[in-house]
Image 1 (cartoon, rainbow, N blue to C red):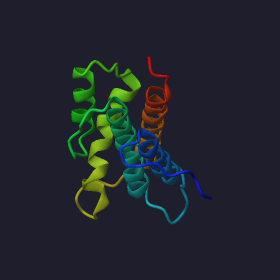
Image 2 (tube, rainbow, N blue to C red):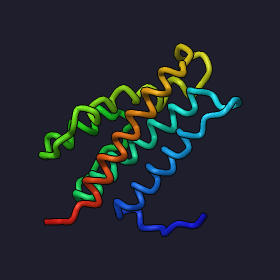
Image 3 (tube, rainbow, N blue to C red):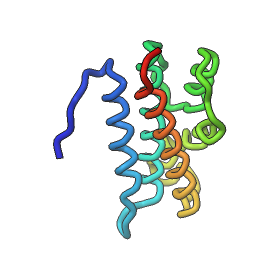
Length: 134
């Protein structure tokens, strides 16, 4: 499937990447590790949050720390709903779970929670990014 591509400074490109990572996170199967799905969920949330920065014309740090990114948005006056504020719980999936032996085993419950959080973040970012300017 081919989708429109946008420049890197277009928040729609960041949202597209967030949606792609979210679709990957939703692809559970017998050979897929929950850790890898949670990594994709974290990436979906991170790219969605960064889409909000891009929409606002605001620079963001190159970090996987979702609490830090959301705090910067709050300081800039962006309301962050409680369900989106939970995104910080996804931060460890950006690093520790990607390699064997750096963290405890990720459970299906962990995965379901991560997926739910990522879906909420992507929905929120879509609403912010795609809202009419005014």
